[in-house]
Image (cartoon, rainbow, N blue to C red; front, side, top):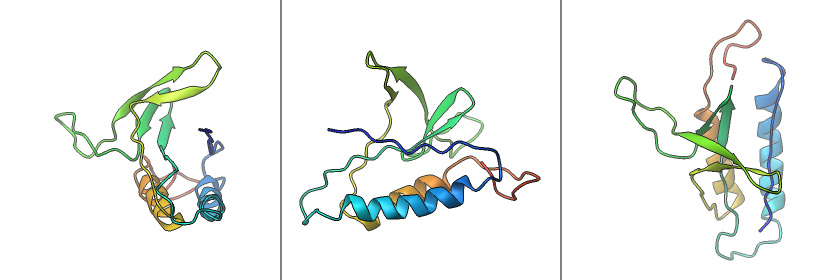
Length: 123
């Protein structure tokens, strides 16, 4: 199957989260436009790159003994063709545009955020 990636990069407070939300809704509708109730065909992974680390935002939370509700850390691997994959990332299979949007909203809510001068909740 084909692999597609949505990647947002930019300065804190530049509107990445707002822009991504609108793009996700439009993409979800378009992806399911020609599907007639067949079994889920779309696999979704949602990861957060933070510095040189990668975290799974769809997997169940983990604990390190001191803190709970942490996102599992993944290893990024480069393939021979130059593509990358997050080893061990959860694959979920939404059956409708609504399920896809709900998955993306859940993952979005799990992103690491903190207050900055530019934005009260920023990642």
